[in-house]
Length: 254
Image (cartoon, rainbow, N blue to C red):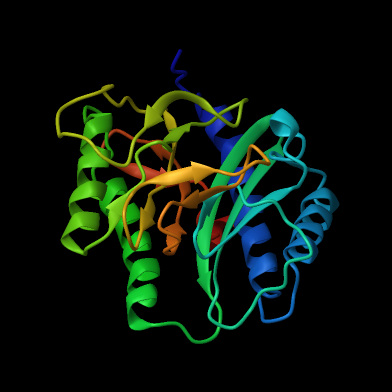
């Protein structure tokens, strides 16, 4: 069932979103050659906990960490470990925050050191694809409008779209209805209404779209071992557009 959030709920979700944004900003300071992904996970846990909130992913269906850290050909759900970040890695960080009983969900992909122009374009264009999808959001639009815009932009820039993994609704649960695919056709799917809260999250590959699940039942990688990038924001649908709940803090919110 798709829930429509009240103004009170959206205010609380924005608070969760601000903390998500600040957590990403804190993690970003530490992403460098030689740091382990487990160290990044501890930084996130300590930061979220210090703000009287809870990492949404920790123990979610048994996930053993506070954030997902997915490197190079890992698409999503990378489990933090003793693996050290190297020059030339691209590092996707996915953060969920539970605050005041509501979740926020956001992801970014970072370039570490020297990468090829092709890999840099993958990261840049995956983020741009996210905003192409967001640009279609407003009351009366359709879920398919979002995915169609993301897919069109991805294909125009030589990238493939992972189809098995999708965005989703967000609220008192980290994953709610509806699904938000990163592909599709305009004018199809659920009709958007003001007050819906969605996590839109393109996962685009440099090579083919195909993926596989590791034996740990979490980590998902590209079949061809070519890099993948991931960007995500939690947004609320408005009458004439959308508002990013996991975005930068405005002067009025400081």
